[in-house]
Length: 472
Image 1 (tube, one colour):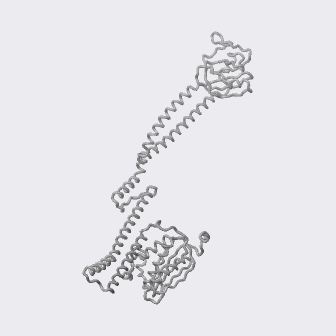
Image 2 (cartoon, one colour; image 1 turned 120 degrees about the vertical axis):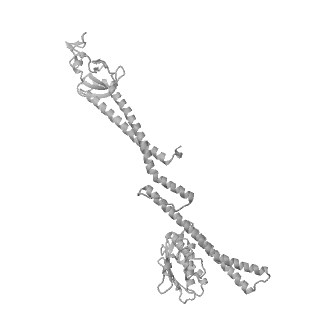
């Protein structure tokens, strides 16, 4: 049942229960405080000399006035010529042998504790709750007046009990009204507090129904609900950006694949027509055509591999291990040399160890070198590769990049105006940026002094191998 309740009803019940509990605790404390105060007043009235002492002496044999005083009242309510009051105070004497002499009309049962006071020192007293012979609850004070004798005076607790009962009903009524008020207040508070949540819920349901990621929630204030609205707006903005990047990636990939696919289809159609027509191509043109087909297939394979590499999330990579980055750069240089046999590559490496994905970092360096040797083709100046203090620089002496295009060099499918006639998919530098970002580093491209471009790649690490890796 609780699982099917709405948040508003649960919040209302929670507020009502909390307020009801607080009112109930306060009512109980109030009842106990009043009870203690009433008992204190009753105890105060019992303090001092019992009110019936002037009568209990002559009335009871062996009373406090002396053993010779008369102890039996006359027929007309007189003792020693003195008229007894119509109602004596509830006072009685307790003797050491357990006997008692009641001066009033409220005889109280004697307990062992009362008898113990008849043997106690003079003036010792005790307060307790007791009962009369008729079963009425009373408050009793017993006081030792002399050896073998104690006096008991009592006060009825009927008035206290009736007062407490009336107070209990009053507090119960106040508690019930408080619960109703708390429920009403809780409902009002829940409606007011959850109104922004309701708007957020409607917005989420609208986005789920329409997939409209441009939906925004008005944000008011700086409380948790406002922060939730800001987070929702940021989430929809990020999702919209991701969807737009995905759409652009698909569109760009389709555009990049269209050209090699068209060329492949054209060349394959030419081969098929020549074979079907019984006029096969000569050996030299056929070899050129097949070489062209192979190059186009390789270009498509590279493009598909680059797309797969970029489509992985940041969590989808090989486990990071300690990488000797200088060795990785050296392997990448060896892979790049055969691709540009006419371009010299100068290498200067110092040791640098880091944690990362070795394959991804090697591919990133290869991509940087491919760009450098591609733009350095036919030039006398060599490509310079240096690794110092965790910073790898790759310098070429090509035409450089226009300043207005530098902010876009790491975007997917971006190609400089000077490189659009050259082979490539425009994904190489995007792969470099992703690999470096996954390793916790940064990369940038700038125009070098004297011409050409300079790529700077910085990765966190150390010039020495870690002790754990060295021990392994």
